[in-house]
Length: 416
Image 1 (cartoon, rainbow, N blue to C red):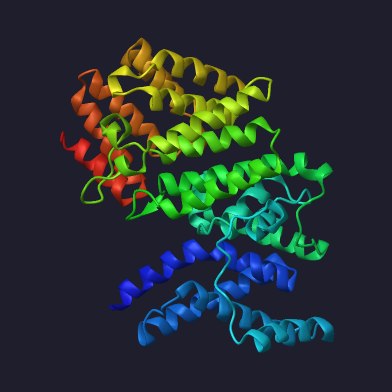
Image 2: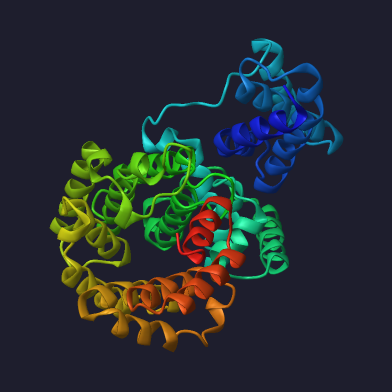
């Protein structure tokens, strides 16, 4: 296998296994930062060795074994308590090897990845630091990808993650789920982490792949486990509903050659009805918990409007625009306003949508955000202003890091 192909394999395995590996190491060494360092050492070893020796039959188990051995070496070098040292060494001595990361969903208390999420979302950290650290360690996203999710410079995000690790280390935060009384305090950050992780898989911000289903499935699994841990929290079920409904589109979002297929062009016969049924059921359950919808349930309700429409033409855009109105009032942000502009353009005409988009062009948080010119291009195209539309699509293409999305935008910039 060529070195470039091996590197792609290593990266793919890392995306799938890293959260479980780091979670297991955190339980052993008692520190998130050190656990990630050991996992990164294993990743570097794979990048060095696999091109020469070939990819192991069970690459996840290989990474896990090497990472744990690195952890034991670090324990020795740091001269920790003898009892802990012997306990760690005994694990390898008795088993001979380390099993692959646990694939079970199991009970919430047994889910090590979920425990890791709650550690990273500790109240000692600021909300932004919680989410950034968890996306980096649990979501397996690069620092650059996390920075794009926050729309902040990479250097700023990297410093935030380093400070968060140091804070957790100095506080000696235990590897355990928080007591019930602390769950509400951490829940908002945990939900945001799961949401952003799913989004990165659903529409990758960089690279050749348009979607990364394995990331989405991990996020959805965590959401389902969390729903079992907090069954009376409407927003947990709202987020699960949103992810189920979005996941239903996977097969239709990618063409025969891996090309991106936009929502309005998708063959809805390929949407997964089981995911849709689960999503609608979770949304109904959230509604039955009482109270007004939160941001995730509102987004799930928007996704449900699309899921119920048998064709793109049957989409209830008036209901979607009303839901975006409610979402803007609840969580006002330029990104939500931009999405609302799309719905307004469908209900009241492209002119109305374009006015909203142009009002957002001075927003600092949208500087470099490729979807702003992309939405503008779509509205201009519908108005017959083809030259301006092509220029907007070309600008959007120059701003995205996603190769598949760039292909779509360049095709539209060329009038195709």
